[in-house]
Every structure is written in structure tokens, then in C-alpha cells.
Length: 186
Image (cartoon, rainbow, N blue to C red; front, side, top):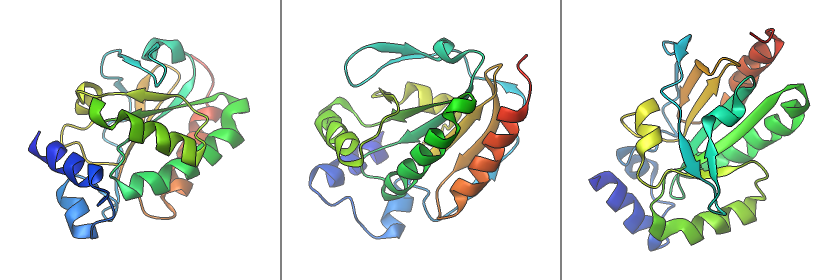
């Protein structure tokens, strides 16, 4: 909780572009790429339902039978803001093959207008859900390291889990997605 308050304090004061070391201390894992496959085959951690930017509730179950890319991020995380446009490009290339994408912002309600500005500035076209109490991300990533990317297969099992972002990571994520999309439906 303290990390989240400090992160918001700096973000709200326009100091989001702090040195990488500070970013890492807040749980922003941009420099340390960590790909974990131990989540493969596990059941998606319970269903969830979160509001989108318009206040409509969106449930995980709405994506049953589809390959789903979940991208967790916050407004102060520079690696998150580098990764999301690249993930959007992948989604746009692969959505006709059955890929769905949802981003989950973990900022609190006091930063909602900033989140909306970021979505507009980057022209994100995928759904943006709000996990303002960090309830959902803590199920996938209790340390709240960002960015976190989770790929769910068509049975909503975790097929791939990735923390952090460095240029080139998007290629590994796309490879994993192509593998998942090539698998038959259950």
C-alpha cells in the first residue's frame, strides 16, 4: 500500500519519469525481464468483473473460448507505457485469428482522469478496465510488479506470464500468442 501511495504521489506531481532505480523500487519491473512458465496450465485465478472507463462492468467470463491477453499497468510506469502500444499492434494483427486483449489499470480513483488522458494520447482501442483496489492483479502478481502480461488460453488457464518490459519482449509474447492461437478450441 505504501508503494502505491508513493507511486501516486510522484505520478500526480508529474515526476513519473524518475530514474530507473526508483521505478524498480516501486514495483515497476521495466529493467528486469522475467518470464515465468510455472503458471502454464493452471486455472485462471477465479473469475473477475471490473468496471471499464465508462463504468460498465466487464467479466472475465465474457472472453470464454478466446485467447486473452491481459496487460496490467499504471500511469507512472514508463515500461508499461512503452509496452502497451506494442501489445496493441500485436492485438490488431491477431484479433481476426481469435485474440482478445484487455488492459487492467491499477491506479486508484484519484488518477482516473490521468488514465483517461493516457488512453486518449496513445489511442488505445482495446478495453481498459480499472482495478482501483488492486484486487485482481494481486491474484496474478502479489508483488504488484509492473508491467505484468498474462496470456490465458481458450479454457481460461494461464498459459504464459511475463513481468517487466524491455524492447524485444513483445516478440516473445507474440510467439506465445501464435502458439495459443494455433491450438484447437476445447
